[in-house]
Every structure is written in structure tokens, then in C-alpha cells.
Length: 350
Image 1 (tube, rainbow, N blue to C red):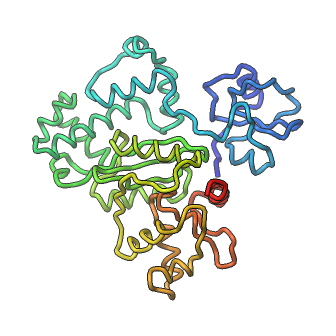
Image 2: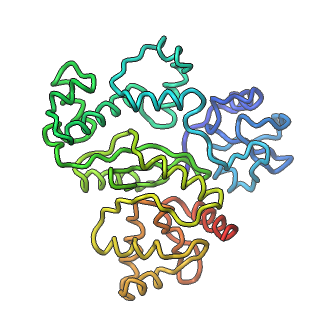
Image 3: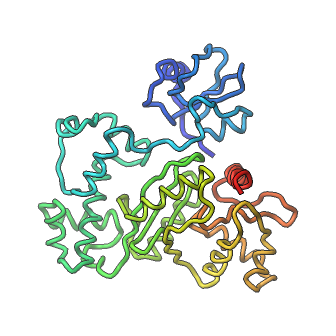
């Protein structure tokens, strides 16, 4: 459940009146007289103050009985990197050692204050923290290709070897010298109609796709660190582009089978369960008992359910298609409201 603190009602109503893009996604507005809910940037006629109620998420508005607005489409994917920021971040990924002042940012069409606010709101870290992560990722790539830790540190913009080693270990949990032979997982956020997703990928493929408000997410990140030997860090990965394209097509009902490569590290039993999950046809469901029979272990219903819960790659490995024996929706880490939305969307397009 989304529990982030909302601004006060008067601030939100002023933002709605001004169609303020800074508040897009921060709150949603339900209009009692029409039964619809909108984003802060909606261009529809401004409702009267006494007729509106504010929600922290689209989910809360839906549960309260409001319908999505057909003007501002509050359930559609929202661009995570608005305007000039998208090209700017691509530039940083190409050259993470670059040093930028506020004047440099403005010359690139990026407002420094909005940039810092955006990173804090969407990623929970500072812009400088993101830059450090990019530089650590670049240094890891150089170490993995045979360069010394010292050479990698200098090439990535650190003038002090000790400062580089400290930052590297703080972010990844491993020293630069111990990083050779390990796998670094890069993570990023991807917008979706159901809220932002945290995606993670190695060179082999996508290894994480979870809704950011899932309670198990910190545990999954810890397990990834244990499995690969290093903590995930923010950054770019070629698989993210393909993943974003396929997710966008999926949510539009235009894609029924994902082809993006996966890196599904797990126990042999978990791998069997996850492989069978991917055989459930789009737009259909299967019970936990049927899942257990499909892997040849009809008595292992509870173990199958646990393996479903341990799935780190939601939607693509479709654990949302598994339901109770009585046909009721049960056990989905992203929330039953999302499970219902996904199943209904797939049935409409099947």
C-alpha cells in the first residue's frame, strides 16, 4: 500500500488549478460529482474545491470507487525522465566521470533544483549519489576487463585511491580488489500503469523486476547481493531498453510473450517452478495444485507456493496467473489489486 505523505490539501488544490507538472504522480484527485480521478496536470475543467478528494496513488483512487479520467489517463505509463533530462542522463551514462556545476546543468536545459527533487522523489537518492553509482559501475567494468583497481579508479574520475576504494565498498559491499570475478547487477526504475517497477539486470539478462512498494523488495535485493557477490547499484544496462519496450507493449495489450533475456538465479527446485510458470498461457490461470502436478510433485503445493513468492521477476515470470483451488485470488507480492488488474487486462486482450 502506498503510504507516502501528501502535501496539505490547499497546496494540492493550487497545484491542480495550475496544472503543475512538479506534482504529477505525487497525488491524484477524485472528483465527487463525476466519479473520476485525475493527475495534477489534467486539462479538464477545474472542479470546485468542495467536490475534490486527494489520494496518494491511483490504487487508492480506484479502491475508493473512482474511474480513470479519459483526458489525462492517470493509469497510463508516465515518462520517468521528463524533457531534456532524458537526453542529459544518457549523456551521463556515456561519460560518468564528467563533473557538472549548476551552470553546466542549466546550459543543458536541466533545472538543478528540479533535478535534485526528481531524483529524491523517484529514486530516494541524491543526484550526486547517482553519479557516484555510474562511476562505480564504469570502474567495475574496467576491473572486470583486466585493469587494476588503481587504473579503474583514476579513469572513472577519482583522484584519491583511498576515496575510490571507500566509495566502491560502501556502494557494492565489496572492495575493488575483491570485485574481479563477481557479477554487478545494475538497477533502474521503469514506469508502469500500476506504479514504478525496480528492474535489475546482469550482462546475461534481467534478474529483477519488482514493484517498488513490495515489502519483500529489500529481502530480494539482499538475496541478489548474496547470489552475485555484490550489492546492486543504479545504472544503465542494454537489457533495460528491450525490457522497457516489451513492458510498454504488454501493458497496451500488444505483447503476449516476453523475449528479453533473463538471468534467473535460484535453486534447482525454484528454477523448475519458475520454468513451469512461464508455460501458463496469456490470459489464463492455474491453481497451485496444478502447478505442483505440472512439475511432477503433486504433494508439494506449499513448496510451489513458496517458490512462486520467491520469484524476483514479476509479470515476465507470471506468478500473477496462479490462483487458489477455489478460483479466488491469493498471495501476490505486488498486492491483490495489481493481480486482479493484470488478469483482467490479459483477459480483455487474449
